[in-house]
Length: 277
Length: 323
Image (cartoon, rainbow over the protein chains, first blue to last red):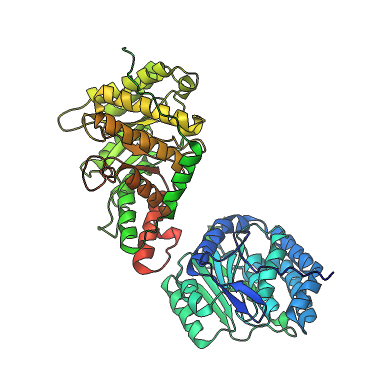
């Protein structure tokens, strides 16, 4: 007897739950898959979940966030075959790069603070420090390709810094990001820290840009018009916005990681403290 | 005291009440009607803080928020009242003098009510003397659940008479009776406690004025607080009292209503339960004089929704003052 396999419904991931779009919409990707077409209201719910989860996540120690990110790497490694088959020919190399990137980022969890923070010389009886803090809720717009590495390379630095993210997955191949939700769900990251939407860029980008609860935006591989929309909206409430022209590649993923990538979603605070002398 | 003439309370079908209450969440309220509902709901809020750490400064700040929920916008209505512990009433009365925002005080040994009757009455008296416009009393749930209903009735009547006797030509102290429905176990008990309270309010003379007496779901100190089925049962008790005696009893769900959307679900419930009773076209209960929301974070969510509706942009929590 031949058994029909069961296809997975590709759902979005909001507040730790796998959900369909509140709008009920879905769209075909290729000739077999359908994904949710997320709406403005899904984005709103995701931001609400993120802003609820973010304070707790950022108050966890950097060490703990690093450990949890290692765990994500482990979970991804364990499912590498599934991801590789999802991604096609170059899949194996892309999954390996994504795992390595997570491990590398995990290592930075309690170290970027020392590299980016400074002790500033001032003319007076004060210690003067600049320390970094996560901006809060970060909107992430993934490049279309590479579907998995593009996603991981943008969210890992943001969450390791203590931010919560609301992510719009690759539009042309969203399945990898949606699948990654299962990695997140099994790796001890608190619900709401990572929220994954699928949907239309032109429809959602104005809302990513204008939602005032979103404090930072990171996008890669988007066209000029999207960039304009994101930057204009971000100006409204002074969001930090980084648009990366060259999306990460499987060969050169190392270039996009480290304190420089983490810095995109940090805010700096300078403290004057009276010294005894 | 004479025995109360409490009408036999009908039993409540809990399944149907839940189903009916759920129905009110499916009404489509958009655009202009949403804008209206939001403003109406805001004007019905009793802005509340009932914490051990409340300080005069916090009370003053909440009073400012109550008068102008969005200081930069004068078209946004004030809330109906503020609701504090008795020790804060003087400060609030001073801060709100002449603004039209009422000062409500919880009293009678809030939230448990587990104090001797004379202490509870004294508590009420003092709050009135300090300038409270409205008293939120708790009923004796222990007595109610033990079946000592006469005792519960007598106590409500005693507090209600205190309020009624304090009426002057220019100030009528109102009373809200908190049933603490989360402790009453069944909807039948909720209905019974509602009827008991309404009869006591009527007996005291507080209902000589529409909205002189309210019934209120909860203290906000225990969970579950206000739910839609419970509120529906209480609204039906209010409806039946109106049909029976022509009285206008107010309703105040309190606790657990944190967002604008559930607030307009409640408004739908009020409209569809109490509309057209007295032959008038509108629903008299859709007014702060007969319906209130006891809440602390609801006001800010309503403001968020108003801004979203007008600008199309989602505001952040930090766009509005906490108090």
